[in-house]
Amino acid sequence: MGGLIQTKGTQRLAKLFNNRFDPLSTARSWANNIDGAQTNLCAAFRNPGVNLLTLSDGFIAQYASAATWPNNGNDLLYPSATMTVQVLPAAGSLNRIGFKLPPGRTNIPGHIQANASFRNLDNRRTFPAGTTISSISAVGAGGTFTVTFSQNPNLANLALSDRISFGLEKHGQLVRRWRWYLAHDLQPENHAAIRSAISSALDDNDFTKITFQTIEETQRVIANAQRQTDNTNDEFDGTFILNIILLTQQTTAPDPLDPQQ
Image (tube, rainbow, N blue to C red; front, side, top):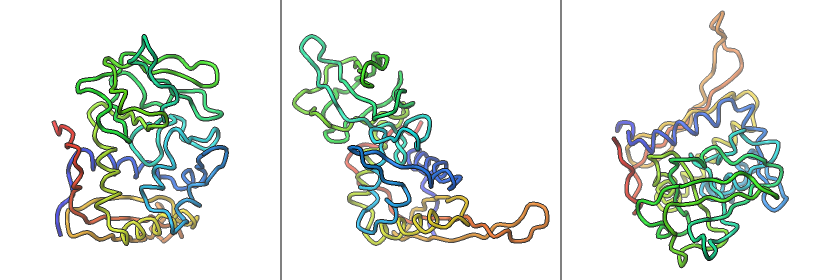
């Protein structure tokens, strides 16, 4: 068996998933809000017709529900905060892009801040190299706010509803690379295996958390239910942890790997 994939991006993804699904009692309450229709996370994972890419895209910051979402407002299944463009740059302020918070949300997602990285998930050629965030406005009427960039984006490569993903400073390529992996590298049967395993744990209150690990090897998925013991008498207490191990080669994504230093 190969060793753990040690790139910082893979470690960041595993950390995110381990945090998101611990405890499962919290994760079971999460729901998105898309055009006024809510979908519970449990129901989303229960749907066999939805792969992990489509599922992840449905739980971005833009679709955060008012009452059932982590307080920081970031994406649920990406290590970022992804918002759709609501107002394109205007004459005289070509470096300013407008966004709008989802209904009921009042705070800008936590990852949208000074020194954040950012990428357009729908067109990689939007922002010139070296572009940074100059400022972020306060939230205005109707939940609107603007992000001012240090350089003008290429307007030919920016459209309304493009998804701009804001993340940790040194992980600018991570979400694009991960989405490529889900779209092109993860085999359909392994999409189904991971989705089904997570769904089973979400639907069974005896499962208290899910852990994730990635090993470089021929691609397959191992899901193991681990019985838990009581801290005082070492007897089984009727609860379980689901351990998911993805054995896989690293992604073939065309976007470069983020710096590892």
